[in-house]
Length: 447
Image 1 (cartoon, helix red, strand yellow):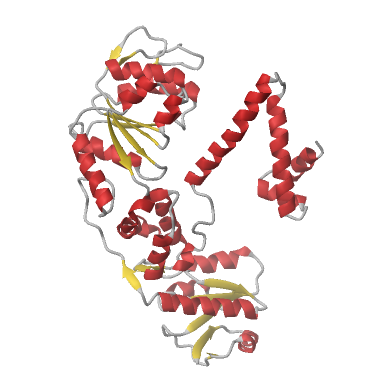
Image 2 (cartoon, helix red, strand yellow; image 1 turned 90 degrees about the vertical axis):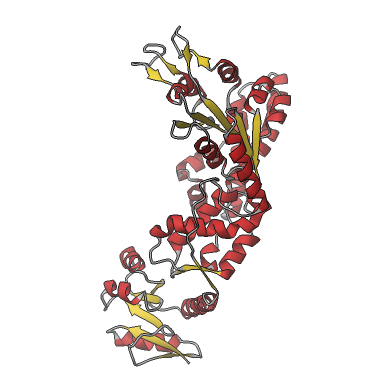
């Protein structure tokens, strides 16, 4: 018989719980708590703050009659494993007890968290042959003061590699300035890089130094360099050739000494063939190159990465974090990781934040792989472009008008048809999922 302890001053709750307990469980008359007991805690008659002291002994299941969010949030904040509402549901109680039984079984196979030794020669954590080769190449390239092109999928750690190259080089301690070429609007990117003089354009109320000037004697890291507009590529090429540039609105040439490290998740050689990237700039950027492999190619590094990220974020855990279970690690290793190390880092952070015990378990990984990763979203965008661009070309050849409106109407029709089918024609639910006003949805459906 498994012992159930109910902490309450309400006798009716004792009867309610006793009536739905499954075989093998018995409500104990004793209120003494041990690690093998299941503890139900009545929020309506006991002090919620007591949960904080009890949670270190065992898992607490809180119960309340109140149909408001306050008690639920309060109990969860104090450390309750689960919160149930009265009248109690037999199925919910059974499911929760089974979940705790499974957790108890899983946490018999624990991997304690260990602190990793510092890795001053390489920014990437791991011990696989692939990562060792990457670290060796980082060390070699750091000693050669030439441009470096870092390639690899989204989330593989390209910026960390760039930082490591800068830190191991003779430019250590000098500025390391990051520019995300995809995040800065095209109209602002030139002024961000080269700076501008007062009055050079509307809004330029004072002169401003550009990133290339700020990075003088150090390194500038051009992330997502494949997103640079063609008009700016020519100016960047000239800078790489001469280490000089003109700020916007200035006739005075500025000389700097900057090492350029760039990164991309795109195939620049293909972009060169398609005319979307200058061939001369491509060769200038890739004087030396380093490729970062996807996480799927070195899964043996998942274990040290898990230790590393737990140590980094364990201070955010709702309770002291002692380790993780072997099934937890096994599930991580069996996953494909389309979002690479960044996705793993986010999963560890999420697991720590959602953990209900002192260990990370498979219960924190229920959402793993459920939502598309950044890499998958990029692929979707490219697939969408491959459909839209041919359509646009044909429409332009036919000299069609109002292309923007026609495309949007077709896209809207497909989206609304699918989402209404999903919600069984429930327009309110469809609007909620789409994140638009219900009246907006109804207005568009009339077109």
